[in-house]
Picture 1 (cartoon, rainbow over the protein chains, first blue to last red):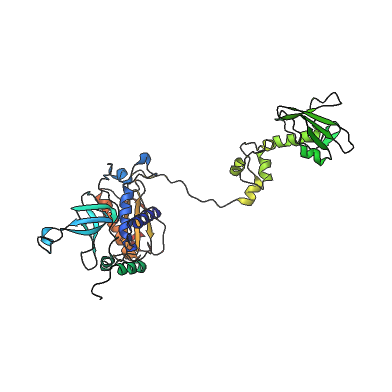
Picture 2: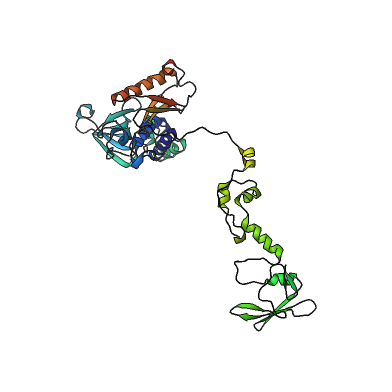
Length: 163
Length: 232
């Protein structure tokens, strides 16, 4: 079972370009998905979820791990009142047990270096990875940035304050 | 060896073959000369005699039997017949021993490219040599039947250490329900007994919340994981 979960988690992190430090989120989501997937050890292609709860699990809320999510900022939290951004770019991490309307996401802007939050009112952009972002933002959220790549991008966009 | 009109030829005896084929290279090796001309093959020995000749018919040179009256078939010497007989009747046990006590499953897979040496399949007898030389300790692994009720049996395993995560976790522990394969994961910073027992209690509480109870618990007795009073 460890291998099953690790394989799922590894695939998700690889696909979503998610840093290794997020492995518990990947494992947690892998476990969540395993419960909702048919298992050969159960008869009639049932999932563990169905075996335990007796109902077929919903899958309509499933989204790709590591994809780009736009999190709605409630009016009370907006810094720029009228013309400020209404959403934050976040990274899809997982699900919340017993609900299909709330997701677990990584909010890059929350806290000092980002924070995992569980919230609704999200718009998913599944074909894009949240982590494929500018170097500056990657630095802010403490992602390990490949030196080679950051160098290239720095060359392309010279720092205006440096000159 | 087959004698044909005074010519000795090395031969294979293939009973399923309806036609007897003569190899020109065999004739050459016996010091004979074959001349193909105008639809006629003339075979001449080193003394210039012509013991055999063949005429072309539908792409094949058909050998004409000269001389003796009873040339209706190429005669098989008795020793050849006996070789053929042994090939046919060799039991699976004999083949097993010939192939250095090859296991029977693989023996079954040997292709019978050569029709003569078809290994017959029959249920083999116990080979004493095999037992004496290859016996292994039995692995006691009964095919465990699935539990019939959820949370009757719980499996647990620990994975790690991994790279420190965003939350500082290095390990994770999983609890698998044997009946439904429903899995729960918990993350640990260290694999200390306190932490593990706390997670186990959390899991136990979760199971209780489902209106069920854990009856049995099984783990791989990893070092440091369950050396605590809760599990004794």
